[in-house]
Length: 118
Image (tube, rainbow, N blue to C red; front, side, top):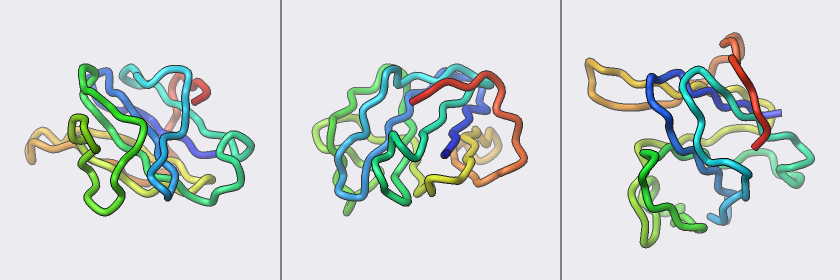
């Protein structure tokens, strides 16, 4: 299963999109600090990878993303950042205060904290 951990001090909205740009539905888009969400292989529907995006909690998010101009979202707010994640990978979302940016990185060893389904 894929795991996305929010390692910032902020509650962040995470949205996943398939390769065709359509959103993968989820119960709750916000992940509090030090919490994680997982995407099971069954839930992903047989795909090998998807695009994970991070937004500010108050962002307007649409159900389709233009994969040609990521991280921009059609008729919505732009993402803070995005990453291509494999269905068996663990990614961590962090804030780099020195560079004044957010980013994802791959880390199979990171502790998940409290983990919930997508």
